[in-house]
Image (cartoon, rainbow, N blue to C red; front, side, top):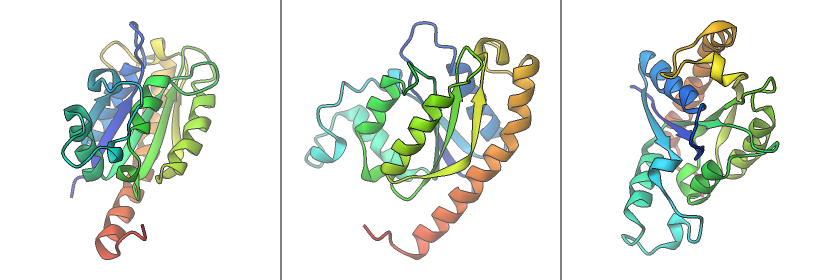
Length: 196
């Protein structure tokens, strides 16, 4: 059974270099047999959070929110591709995730961070770990961190140079970790109903 993996990306900037990492991940997971799909917060276009999905009466949520809720509920795992803004999370990605809650429960999540500099989005990765755990996901221990994003991947998301080589070497463990947890969570949900 192929894992269904949603790759979330949340930059709204005009020169979005992190999309290269998101594109790489969609392709790399696909090459390993997963059904990977990019969920670009900017393209989804949810407004600043006013009402969560669960706060709408059944059938009355905006269409984009309804479609995304269905995808989240049917996914086996998630990857959050995050840049770092002032040692923190990108607001576009955080806003998208905050529209949902129970839809995330009982599934694994992995974090892939990036930045133009050497720290590779490490501060954002740490912040996301706590947030995703609070939202009911199991955050896997493997992470990807890509510094010098503009030099590590070309504009089509293909690894280049030393940074791209490091990403290529790190990806298999990252993917294996997520796949193991996705299978474990899927099998357990099939056997035992979640407690809440």
